[in-house]
Image (spheres, protein in one colour):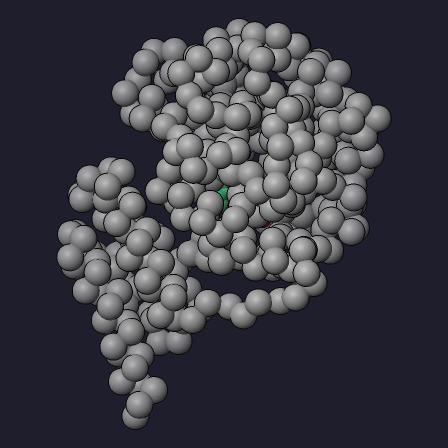
Length: 331
Ligand SMILES: Cc1cc2nc3c(=O)[nH]c(=O)nc-3n(C[C@H](O)[C@H](O)[C@H](O)COP(=O)(O)O)c2cc1C
């Protein structure tokens, strides 16, 4: 048990925010696997302030999935503060997180995401402004810096803490690295050390690809919790396996192909309920590929799933994998 502000987090395994992935459909699935804290996709502050319908739809939180951190992005302290006040007034989010790490040019052009990493002073003002505008804890998700010539993560951690930030999640890469190279866990340890005097918890992120890696990150960096992103794609079991490993030292088996396909059915169902059949099935295509990843002889099924238009088609294609696989095994 640890806390972010006054929010109790029951374990040290956190689901990373992933745009286009961690919507309420996937979050419901991951929560069943016992994630301690779950982040939403990033949500535009401007979209909220302009009452954009699609943006507002992203604010729905299922009471079952709490505690939830709702992530905002924006390039201006005042508009972020107004959006945060809206989130506090109208949603069940326990924590309001601000994205200070997104590397996408269209986000950085708005002075948002990783652009903040260039200016710890602006970040201090940001946290002062937003944390005085709301009562709920306001947190940060950062990268190490813009590039190797602009590594201000210690100053950023101090600015966030002094400005009133309640926790820092740090992805151990620079913006220039995107998702390449290895995450720098030593730098993550330095962020933890910088935040420790303020009593602000740090969540380590980057390359936690297994329960053992999670344990190693906790031991090597001293962070309060680990955040898992890509390793949970098509593999929400990693959350439960990690929670269990950290609790007991035991390593539970990987899911079977049948369990994976069953979960894909469930995910499809949730997505169709959330977004309607046309959009839900389209979104499911990438998840189908992730659920099938690493399964023997799945290439053709994976490809067919990319062309599915209806839920019935998608279901038949996925079920086809199991029957084809059974045929292979029995031969
Ligand atoms: C598809 C995808 C979408 C992402 N969207 C966001 C986002 O909306 N906000 C954010 O802070 N990070 C986002 N990230 C970054 C992840 O939260 C995480 O920091 C990164 O993937 C490194 O962790 P990992 O090695 O466990 O994947 C995204 C990553 C991926 C792969």
